[in-house]
Length: 141
Image (cartoon, rainbow, N blue to C red; front, side, top):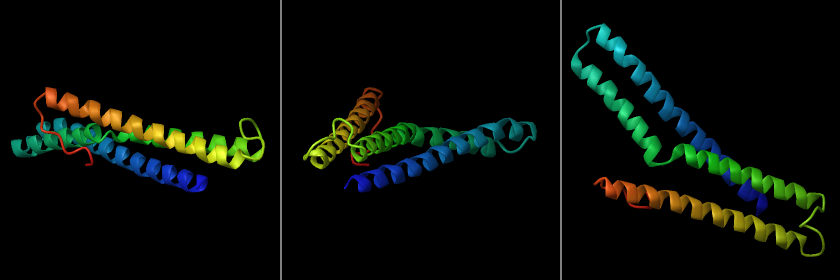
């Protein structure tokens, strides 16, 4: 069970790191291309499309909190790995006959807390969007 949690957070961290890099690189490249296309006197539609790409890439990263999720996934993986290491060497609080149960309970508490932090971030964003008059996607999206 503990190894499954580590694997899950590791995969989620990689996935969010790739998504973050993709949105950031897309936004930077499109933004850098705007002055080039202006200087080259390309059609205004091309310049507008590049601006839209910057806006969309930044909006996706912000709306779905890709960077924050990447950080949280890695933090959780490190926390779980630390607890597993303490368990393996019989270090406190993993001493005695209930050490394995204590490890699982503690890891599940970490995961529960992570879920609550994610929900709090999503709720805060929804409230900000509603205040700004933006129609946000459903919480599960």
